[in-house]
Length: 303
Image (cartoon, rainbow, N blue to C red; front, side):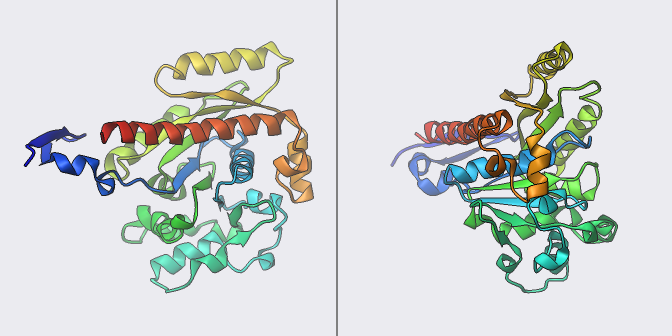
């Protein structure tokens, strides 16, 4: 029989396991679904557009995608043409409170199957104030995670469009997520609040979700015509790129984004050849490559 090997972990001790286990598939079991929170407490940085465009691009790459509108404003939901709560059966708020009250329902009935190949879990103004109700619930930080755990096996990617605040919804999103993408616009005061968000992420990682990672900072709303936009983008890369990935792809400002919302389509479907749509396709490739690199590392470690 082979001798045991010492496997060092992220703990102040090591465990010994039989060498034969190292090749077992079950030991390095991977989650099929990756949950990504698109988060920044600063509003107007492109969280919603990034959520829907990245989701649409991943779906076009034949990935099974669910986009969750976790913002009480419901901008993502309305931008895809579902402007009235009467146009869908349930919203994310209903699922949260079904989970809290242990109501046995089929969550799949709450999911909208769009004609753009991705699914949508909608939101509306009824979510506003629900965080106050959540605050008195046992294990309140994990309610959203428990909801997603019941449906995540159906998807390759779940993208969470977080609300622009550091509240209980944001914490629930960070606890449910495997990783985070942080959109930062290429405009003055772009990084305002970013350090607070990073502190919140660190706290969530230490206390509740130790596997949480930052996939990267995404520079949005760039304008190649101005030196200011280029300067801010370079500043973000210099100040944060040393310890956080900054995506190579930068998303240009585009009027087509607003037009798409009025049409009830994603910008990717509305203007597939626009510079911003092409940029989001490149971003999707970067995001997919992150997953491939993680898988490759796990496989190398398991040899």
